[in-house]
Image (cartoon, rainbow, N blue to C red; front, side, top):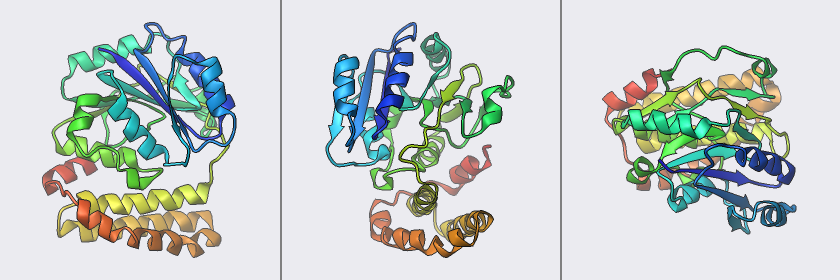
Length: 284
């Protein structure tokens, strides 16, 4: 099976160079590498053209967000499988693509395969050797996951309005509801340097919370979406309380952002059967 690699980047050219250098060491090599420079104001575009001229470079002059960028690359890719990476993450095993191809060939219901990450965000993982057993899950991380492209094209896919955050669990829900599987596989590990550049914790919390609630409005059937939506709001408020009073006082920022998307959610609403929604919730 042909494997495309897709990477979206914004103003982290040094991280991108390191990741692409590691991708070039993969054996077998990927069928193609797609890179989206999303509203970059640094030297990312020039660096990619000079150092990785064979990559398919997509340039968003104005930032569209990582979600829209990945959705576009999923639709542009030519491989049957698409390996999603961040500009600061890459597989540690040189034969990763061979192992990935076998997993998908053996399981036609497999929609997403994802892997444990050694990340600077959680230093203990850098030396961890046991990442547990393979298991079905309800989400994954686009910093190290492989998606079956024909399944993606048959579903709504990543919701571009999300801009950044939460596209993974929302897409995993779509897959489970359609009878496909999301599988965690510890046979491959991802090195995620988790660059601090361009990251903003509270902004990401607001985007994650808003998009999580939008996902409920888009996918959860009536009347259950009332209870599920209330639970999501309260759980995010609980998280903010753990981070401090300043976070709590700023929670209404994302509440207002969420309300601004009510019309969009109603227009695009495609609820799944409660039985399948509950099945998705039951996965770890």
